Image 1 (cartoon, rainbow, N blue to C red):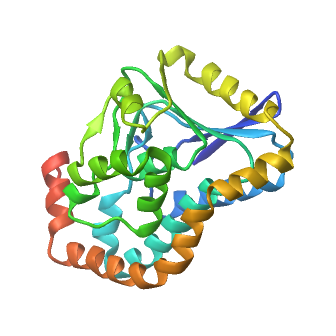
Image 2: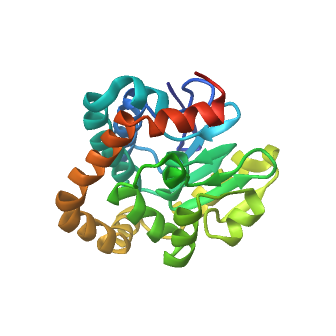
Image 3: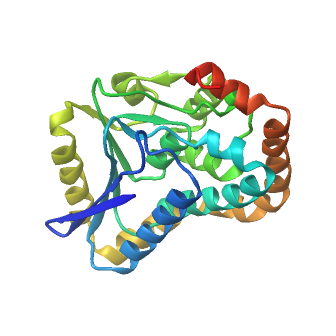
Length: 252
């Protein structure tokens, strides 16, 4: 489900879950546990990537459809916890976006301090409104922090996805590189972040940079999480999510 190796003290974490690393309850919990362990361990930094043709194609919507209300109520809190754990890891975290990073996959990349995307291997963007469901406040807030409010608004309201070069222009990635250079470039970026200052200074600075996002979430999630959950449940019940998946996959 998750593969790890260490390169010069930097943990390389790869999602390896099905064909497109779709986010289900089990993978979310595994990502959360992995980053918590790495945050407490000796790793100097983390490079976060995927395997196969995708970084992550986002939420496993068939699991949402099949699991119904009970699954949604377990899934959305796990989704928020996963994003916030990656976002608040007190070490340098670099995304090596090896392929498609759609919806929740795009947010996972946005959780990282620096994002490197392979050219010609996939697209990145957030498609929740096309599915018919609202963003939880956590991913919406992290995306705004990572890309800037103007870029985040355009990405969210259009549901468009972008190739690597345009992703850089729109703040969804920081660099676009040839696929065979992706890991080396991400490792080099991680080393630069490690070397810029002492680990405790980096951790404190990252905490300060994230202060507005974390305070916003602490203040407003109790009000927004319940109606977001209700809307996801409604879109399961009325067949909207199933209809979207049938259109894009051809599966019935």
